[in-house]
Amino acid sequence: MFLFGEHAVVYGKPGIAMAIKPRVFVTVRNTTRPQRARSPYIDGCFDVMGVTGSVYINSQIPSSSGLGSSAAVTVATLSAINDEFGKNKTREEIANMAFEIEKQVQKGRASPTDTTVSAYGGIVLITGNSRRRLPPQNMHLVIGDTLVSHTTSKMVEQVSEFKRLHPEIVDPVLAAIEGVSLAAIHHLHDPKELGHYMNMNHALLDALGVGHPQLSRLVIAARSAGAFGAKLTGAGGGGCMVALCPRQHKQRVAGAIEACDARAIMTSIDTEGVKKERNV
Ligand code: MEV
Image (tube, rainbow, N blue to C red):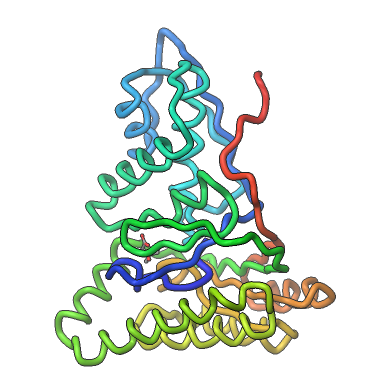
């Protein structure tokens, strides 16, 4: 899930993302009569691994929400294939393969952000092709899912078109998002300060045209209920927002979000990344 810098990462600016608690569980079996999955991400996983098999997915992450569910599914599927077929791929190789699959399915419009955090867990700084793990911090987060559907590729396309028509407006906004992300790196341990940066990042994303009335409503509701800060997360135009809260107000913030006809998910950092649960 993006904490800072979504959209700007597409233009080589830094992005900060964090792995969060809802998990995707994937079971892969080496079967003689494989059923082809209907998702292009899952088909891509079997293709790059050069095997066929059956797959069962149980996701706790809402799909198409902007929380990086496609990346989580792809990383978990590659890892399950790796275990079932004894492929001995490293975590890094799995992260790289997952990124290639996302790029292919999303027609080139993907950053390695969500695939990296899904593979490694924790907090990751992405700049261009470089990825750096940042010290993990426990944050009290509430995610608000607007339940308004959106398409990442469409939102990315929209920003690119806006930038083409009005570089004099869009370039300074992207530069300001970069400034916010770079400042935030030094305050990951300070929720009050981080909240300010989240609010600024949200305003800048609104300026890029990727907001939505329901996202604004949830962001304001969360702040009014005591959150340090709140912003949309992911591609925008619908999908999810995230609020950073004092621990004692987490429940109240979740209630305020639910009162706006949205779904609230209370969450925190995951530091493990992809892992083998058990042999079944
Ligand atoms: C989508 O979750 C985030 C974007 O920055 C696209 C990407 O990084 O792949 C809009």
